[in-house]
Every structure is written in C-alpha cells, then in structure tokens.
Image (cartoon, rainbow, N blue to C red):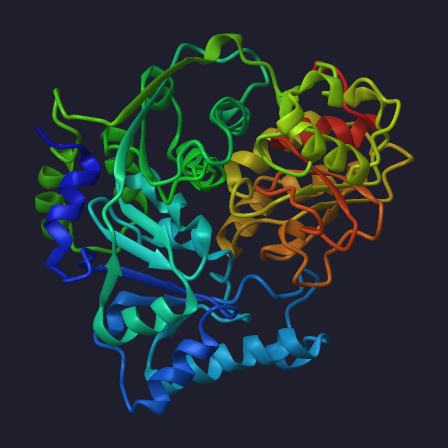
Length: 465
C-alpha cells in the first residue's frame, strides 16, 4: 500500500546514490530572476546546455516594480541590483532558448500563479523552482518542492535532482467552515497547532471533506503554506475538480489529455497506505486567524488575547518577549488594540482571482480608513489582472481607496519598491512575517484576503461582519 507521495517518488526515481540520496527525474522546472543568474553562469562556464529545453519555463516576479504601465521594460527598473537580475534573466533565456513570459508579457506574473493557470503544471508531475513556495503546485497532485541555486544549475544541466526521500504525513480537514473563514485561516490554524517545525522531514498530503469542498485556488493556498509548517512538500490528490481545472487551462491535445485523465483519476494514496504521522482537524470551530508575532506559528483567533510572556514556559519566554518587542506590542491585550498603517493583498499565497473577488466583496461601497496610508492590491498574474478588470474588481478597489497594481511578488518579500518603512504595521495576505520580511523593521500580520479587506476599511482588526 502506497501514499500519493510514494507513487510520485517511485515513478520519477532514477537511481539510488552511494550517499543514500536518490536522483529524481524532474518534469517541470520554473525559473525566475533571483535564483537563476548564478545557475546560468555555471552552465556557461562548464560549456553545458539545458538537458530538456521545453521542461523549463521562466518569468520575472520577485524584483519587478508593480507600477509599470504599458511601455515599461526591464531597463527602466530603478534599483540597480533588481534591474541586473531581470535583464540577466532576459539574456539567459534568449541565449539558451528557454521560454520566458518577460516583464512586457501579458502573461507575466508570480511563477506559482502562472504555472497552473497557463497549463504548465499538471497532475503527476515532479516540479521544482528556486523558491521555497514551489509546494503550491502540489495542489494539483504534483510532487513539487523548492530548491537552491546550485540545484537550479543541476536540474538545468541534467533534468534530475539529488534528494532524500521524505516521510509521509496525512492531514485531514473535516467539517464546514464558519462564515468569512477561508483556506488561509485553516492553514494558519494548522501551523499554529503543529508549529513551524512540525512538518520537518515530511511530505504533507492534505485531505478530508473540507479539501474536497474547496476550489483548486484554495488548495494552492494550503499547499503554499505547508512550507511554513516545516514541510518541503504539500500535496492534494487529483479529483474531478483538478481534472476540470486542467481541462480549462491546458494546451495539450484533447486525445492525449483524455488518456492522461485516466491516469490522473487513479493518482491517489491507497486505502491502507502508511503515514508516519496523521492529524485530523475539525475546521468548523475555527475563527479567522491573524498572526501577532514574528513567525507564522505565532497566530491566534482574531478576537483572542495576544499571548504574554507569562503564558509560556521558561524555554520559550525569550522568543515571545523578543517578538512582542519587535512588533511594538506593549500593553495591548488584543489584536484590535493595534492600529495599522498599510494593507497588502497579493503574493503567491493569495493573489488569484478568487482571493480578489473575496476582498472586493468586503470593500465594495466602503472606504479605506484614514489611518491606512496605503492599501495595495497586486494581482498574481497578467491573466488574473485582466479577469479582475473584466469583472470591474479594479474599480471596486480604487473607488474604496486602494491602489491597483501590476503583477509581481510585491510587498511579500521587500525585494522591490513595495516595502514597509520602519515600524509600519501591515495587514498582509502573504506567507511570512519574519523580522524585516516586508521591509527593515516593518511589522507584518498575516491574514486572509477577507480579514485584510476588513482591516483596510476599519483601520484595525475587528469583527468580520
């Protein structure tokens, strides 16, 4: 009896190495401007070429400004380091013949958004990218994981990856969520339960009645943040929703697609497959979640008290005190006591059309609070942006006082102009709230698009009604 991860592993296993590691064949390799320059340089120095050109897809996302306009190109990026990386991606893709959706393409976007929507992510694939949140693609039944720069070079040259096999964890989400509770809340609650090291060494398969109910986009959010639970891989077995999603987005010949669908329909863990760890969570009682500290595991219900140092054991007191100090939490007892400066709706976690629709529904006919100096909405791709504009979502946001941007990673990681200033407090739909993640001394509170929209309108975190 085998798990889904076991099956994907065995189907792509090339050979066992003397080190105990294995060579795994990689079906799809996504590239962006930050982790690829050194890899391409390594190929050039060794006089090597990509082993399988059509397996590689590239796009700039981390460093690109999100206020570009129609006539913008990579040479107009003001930050010199960012410009060099984006320009080098252009040069390398042209030199080696790799397909790229460049900064001028209407299909450019965050790599983990464009891959599935353009039909390059398919069930049963092994997928890698020089980005930890590659696990996002696991929502379509893939073995997808982030890799380092040296591994990017290795995959380009050999179409294989040297890696150790992970253990299996099964997480079942059962029940029906309360109103205004989304997949972002569910995964944040899960991380709060097991901690940021709870999934270390595991591939996590997400299952249960809740997973069956939700969209592929919502599954992507959950698999995206499996990384924040310490796992390297997060995945969901393909079902009818997966196949319908692929049918809608795929460019594969219909006859070949039909045969593939037969295989995908059986791509799931066996009934009695062995998981080293299993966890079942009743999601019906979960409230909207918001992080208060400097790690995704520092999360509470939106209306709970902020943890105090005295609530923890001696072992953890120092970390809690450091987090409270960094986040500027002194006498405040609840999240609602905190006043926010900025709101960010975007990132590879929550920038898809579903996310934008949810947020727009909240802000429609309302106005951003006076204390919010900037509220930005950044679509995850050119296609998401186009769809949102067709539906008039951009007008809903701008009429409420939000700024509508071009696609990119934006404020998620502070590698582009969208950054927090020191001590600014941000309601963010991104995936990490580490110190300085969104800008030097910036204070990040992770939450869902719904909660970020409420915070933008209220200026504080309140009852999401």
